[in-house]
Amino acid sequence: MNQHDPSANPASLFRNRFLQTILLSSVLLQIGIWVRNFAILLYVAERTNNDPYAISLISVAEFAPIFVFSFIGGTFADRWRPKRTMIWCDSLSAVSVFAVLLSIHFGSWESVYLVAFISAILSQFSQPSSMRLFKFHVPEEQLQQGMALFQSLMAIFMVLGPMLGTFVYSTFGLEISIAVMGVAFLLSALVLIRLPEDHMEAGTVAAKGQFRKDFTEGFRYVWQSQVLRMLGLAFVLAGLAVGAAQALNLFIVTERLGRSKEFLQYMLMVNGAAMLIGGGLVAAFAKKVPPQLLLAMGMLAGAVCTTIVGFSTSIPLTLTIQFLNGLMFPCIHIGISTMILRWSNSSIVGRVNGVLNPMFVGMMVVSMSLSGALKSALPLSTIYSGAGLLFLLGALMMLPIMKHKAPDQAQAAQY
Image 1 (cartoon, rainbow, N blue to C red):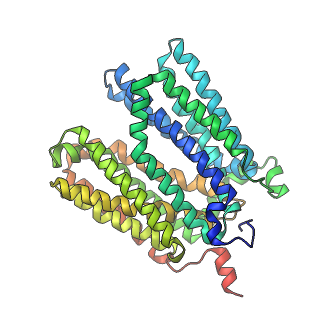
Image 2: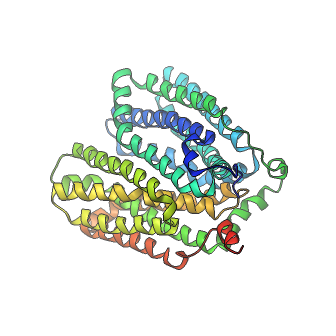
Image 3: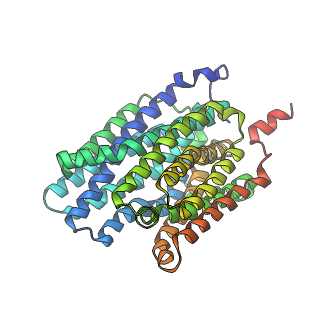
């Protein structure tokens, strides 16, 4: 149950101290992450002469911690004070970045992988803590609008992030780029001090031992909820679809459209700009649409758009479809996040997130790793049609739970 001020008015969303603080922190983190991502990518590509194995290790360093630490991080996030956890995670990330920077300076260039690896580990503790605070400080009727704001922020950096990261690296080099990330994380930790105090229940914070019990409780909680079970299946299907489509986008540009690989950045920018607009539109009507319907709409649009992209040989058509797909994609992210928050008790949000998140990322990595073999065996149109079918199945998963109400809403309807 949300622990917000009962007198809060929906119009006060932008005056919510928690939301102001967490958005500013997210801006700083996104600056650090995008500068880091492109600095490491460009540096490793230069250092190894575009060795595919060395470049693929960057993705391993970023995604491997999600498999190992997401469940653990979610469990601890439910037991520790979330504000303190987030501040410590950002502070430790900054310290680790400067430590790795010293290592790089004295000749160990392979240490660049540690920057992504350590940051990814700590984010598995920080992100579920942020979800807990979100449920704690944002009124129920504003959850979906708040998530739309986050989605808009992510979309802005999808457009500006690659340009920012490339500019900083090409202008200042690797060491300054890594230092920018360290400073950004340190500033984020300082900003988070402004967060309202937790006021968590003493038992939640002080629980000692019983880690295995807490760990398994997250899986049991998801399994016992029909809504969260269906959401888990949608996660799996969406992860498989997104991984295959993202991994082969370059071939859409070079083979289907007959353009050079540099043209991919324009597709991504069109998609990111549409996501920014889509996030704003969802924020405008979020309160009127159930999150299950929002998620189904997003996945249905993904099914149609992904299939068309696989067959299209027209640049205007492909860019138009990429725009429409980006316009609807926020429905998926916002729908998923809102469902996790509404159908999870505040004492277990971290563990539910820790159970569901690896389903999406895990399946995405699996399909990305298989995409090369699929590309050798099947035409692009067949692969993209298969990804579209997976999106369609994900949308159908929402049908059995379309009329379900969140626990708090269901209780309120009885009175």
